[in-house]
Image (cartoon, rainbow, N blue to C red):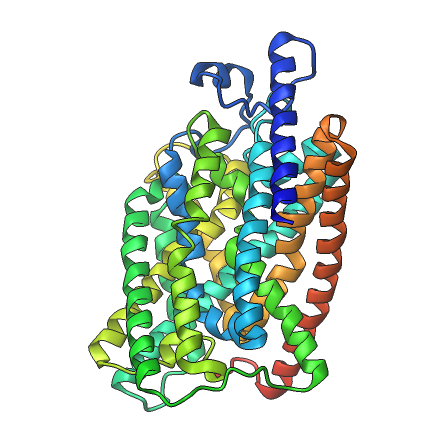
Length: 467
């Protein structure tokens, strides 16, 4: 199976390279300007760049790799022991994470190789879809992407609020401050950060801070959980519930798996990368799916090993240890969620800035006031929804079902199939159609499972619940 997967992918690489050679010789249509052998000046001459108010081609592949790694090791990793491992168990969880890593890398590489398809840089996912399918796909793709990013940001606000609450109760567990209050505080801080950080490329220093913050809460969670696991009696690793509920939770956990590895905004991140954009983005993806996944694996597996089926959806609520250490980990988790949210909100900000002509100095009165109104309004709405329904695991499942499956797997495979169809063998075409069909069914099943979970939790918890 693995050899077949590699052979298919190598065949697709050869087809892309052949197409680039034809374009250079004038014998074919401009296609897949992903020829990594081109000089930087050649890439700039052959690839048109759409109008945008944000910076393009300014960042190294290493910075893009850190953006991707920030997403994969964001504060969400503290929930995967509970939202992935508990429903799937050891075998399902370990195998599922490894398969999700491989399949996600493959799908993201397909999207990255289409970045300069047709001799034009597609700096937005919706631009790429519109170029391949026609203008009608623009709105559909933008809707899917917007839903995906909006739901991810809701998750960050919930987690940020949960981290603040967990820190608060370490010192004063008087039930005066409820989770919705902490979510509101998180939303306010995110708004200030969004106003002060004009675009994705301006995160350079903050990405370093994000890495340090991630290491703090991941190391603390791993060390304290390992200590608890060593001293604890035998744990229960069974998958509980009725047959029906286990089916739905397993499907929901599969959506959490794909959610863990994918951003849904790869073209927007790739737009910031210097030429050659395809070659550099592939380096960033290799970094993300090798070095970048190791901390996530560690905290997920150690957390489940330490607490078994009783693992919570926020691991720092399960660990025991010095108060100051847990407080530092929770504050780090909160601050990292602020930085990570800005990454996933950046496509929305770029759309608004470009549409309303927000250019030039970030400190101009017009630009500053626009960011206050537009970004502040977006985050007020996001914060309100987060506080209204703070069911984190359900949002992960629904996000994976409604948008991550279609954007990352269905569209990626079908777009590549349409773009490279004449250069694929029948086996390669069948492989992509198989992926489209399989992930289409998974998306439908996961949506049903996620909606069921939300309905169940809505009965158990009231709105603005203090979880």
